[in-house]
Image (cartoon, rainbow, N blue to C red; front, side, top):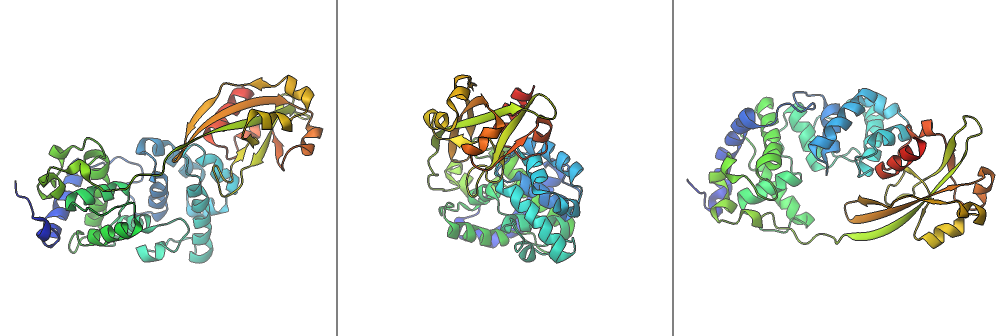
Length: 365
């Protein structure tokens, strides 16, 4: 096995790394994903946004559903924001959905419904960062530019034994600059597509965060972290923000429907910025005592406490305490913030956080 010395790595790697990666991707990489084998920027963009911080297995269902409802950028731009948020509910990181909608509107309004063709131009659109822009430009237009998402940073940090702290923006930029030096020389559009997909596939299936499968890696003889026996020490990243635990009390008000029979539910839109910003949700209180103070005494006596629900966010562990209270709807305006009554049928059209939607489905069944 030949190992490139660290000092000479960047001089020699471009001639060896890209060809091996491209050949490996064509033979062993992933080829059955629904957003592959297309040069449609809309589909590539949608998949890239959905895949941020989200596993492929989760995205598969959402991607097909989203395309069925919004088959092109024009239909997405024309859609009400609530319709977009409703389809996104459960994917998390809801700012992605808001940016997705805004970006579609900008593409239609300012670019005639056609995505710009270069990574530099794409980065001017809402919610499109350097890596997403590079992916669209490489896959759809064959631009010679490297993606550097989380998985790819790990691959390159190990390949180069890059020892700078990737929690720092300056270090991320330096690694991205090094990544440009590893790009294939004079690639065809097909080469750039295979190279870009290969970086993604290698990080997702072989160069994993824990228990990397180095024996299956097509560039193991080039990897400086492997040569030093320190693969799992890369990438270097300072400690993450500590996760906080919070208890939220959900005031799930219901009232007999004047039109349909059954029960209607009171919902408020969550403020921005913050958790679940822009989504519909029952009123959130910080304690049972605070919740009880919001409810007329007679209604509180018949309140139904549902089992607590645990819900994990990026930096937060939520414990949701749903309390169902039946009230006279004429009294709600006296003790709650602005909101609206919705029927069980209308719930399906609104953007609700996944655990909240699940709770209402239980109540409506």
